[in-house]
Image (tube, rainbow, N blue to C red):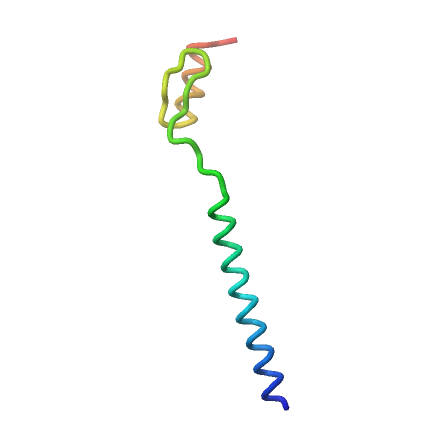
Amino acid sequence: MAEETTEKIMMTMVIAIMGVLILSQVVLAVAPTPPEQFVCPICSEVFSTYDELYAHFTIDHPA
């Protein structure tokens, strides 16, 4: 009797772990990836990082 209960608990744990693993893969697949290029909306110059774009924007296009 105790053996059957232990077996049921183990199966439930295995199924729960598999569910968590599947959900984690779904979340990773749905997560947006950052753009590979950052384009200045004013002059269309392209930068490889957001920080470069920000520096360009604040220096070359001050408000």
